Length: 287
Image (cartoon, rainbow, N blue to C red; front, side, top):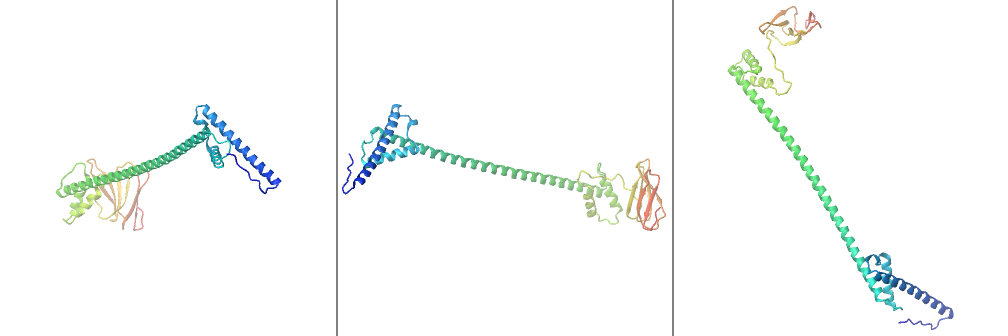
């Protein structure tokens, strides 16, 4: 349907201006009509491939042109092929938009799954670490318990040996404790013996046991010196004596007294070659 123009009460200049405007509008309309028709024909001639459909801003512009053409009833009217071309393009754009939204949702879902998997792995690692620490602590506790049990068994064995005067091969502590027991004035020595047994049955790797007990001093021994070849020992005591100990052929030790100090001997020392011995005492003398 052709559009009617009303020029009532219009001046000649106004009429010309309006005529030019309508001519321009018709020219633009005809140009858009021809462009859409060429695109639609090209699409139809190539078996309507998806690659030749309208997309993006071009699709939006052609849809607006088609809506305006219907609203203004402009001539020539849009063809059925043009309408189908715009409709198919719009449907394809909607499907692509839905696909992109689905892919975005899938990506978000995969990210959430990956984050959950990472959190699970972190928790498993934390749990494994905690379990390893617990097992290590339990192993240390069991080791300490075993050491304590062995020490208590050794103490019981030593005390039993001391009380019954029994010889135990491999336990020189028992002989030492028996000597201590027999030297003790009191017969009620059970508590003292048990305490001494615990001290002598230390389970550390660097435990050393004495080869012999050298008796003779009547007071505290303050200092000891050994010869370079290990054949004699010298000891200084609070009994004012210096004793020189030598090992006999039968394995026993004997001593001779070096008297002369009038007060406690606090230190003894040998010369580097072991031929001379010096002693210092609280009496102020060095001999």
